[in-house]
Amino acid sequence: MQIIFGVIFHFIGGFASGSFYIPYKKVKGWAWESYWIVGGIFSWLIVPPLAAYLTIPAFGEIISHTSSSILALTYFFGLLWGIGGLTYGLGVRYLGVSLGSSIILGLSSVFGALLPSIYYDFNPKDGKDSFTHIISSPWGQWVIAGLLVCVLGIVLCGRAGMMKEKDLAKQQETKESAEFKIGIGLFVAIVSGILSACFAFGIDAGKDMANEANTIWKSLHPGQGEFLYQNNVTYVIILWGGLTTNLFWCMVLNARNKTFSDYTNKKTPLLANYIFSALAGTTWFLQFFFYGMGESKLGNGASSWILHMAFIILVANVWGLVLKEWSAVSKKTLYTVLAGILFIIISIMIVGYGNSIK
Image (tube, rainbow, N blue to C red; front, side):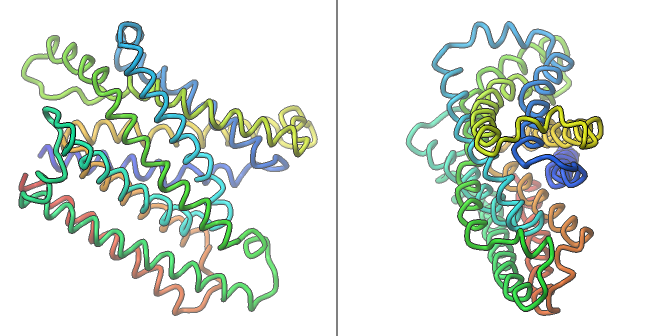
């Protein structure tokens, strides 16, 4: 039952992440940097401490007496992840919700799942599975197999993207084809995919804070299992790092593109723009709110990260179909991306099975 709830929580988180960019498409008359940072303020500054306050009343005290080295390392990974999050938005802009999310999150799933476990081979830590332990155990071998199937699905989605570019080149230019840029899109997607994995490292770096929150909760609720919201305190520090990176770059773009006026431009639907940006930012944060709940049920960072990323890829691709991002392509291209989605679904089932026999 714990496994089932873990998978459900990861699906909800994946749905939130795979859907968060949709409200941004409703923003009118604003430059990308303007609506991105407005949403980001909700994602990284307003909602995380609010969620921590509602679920961990003493979260401020936990942060205040955590060692500066742990806080600094957690914040540092947040900075690096912030670059990944920043380029995620650009990748989705240039490649579309479906293809951009598949490539970025696929790479993130690989690096986020494997690098921490490899690290624990050299620096063992109680409660953490090393890569050697994962590949030598039956459940771990299933998880690795699921990861490989997920990568195959990502490769197919990437192939579909290149086919899509050729299909669009043969047609009259539309808004979609004008923004679709496979070259720069793939570059920022690769950067984003690698650096986005730093969020998993940040969670691990700040695990002492989550463990303390878990210990406090268990002492007040004996016999009720692990604390679902223990990671919420860690998110506060990680997301400060993400805010720092994104705020700096968006302000640079506002200055360069002379778009500071977006925030007060009455010729645009200001209230609606703020509401849609806030909705996007809040929806984005919910992915990690439910990720923490899922991880507390599954108990393994590598498999949790794989499931989380796979669900996001799945949801993002479904949105891509709903938004008709693939409507102007050939049947061969459409079948290729559908095959990629199918492999990703299979990977989710394999990872879920691996966890069930752990």
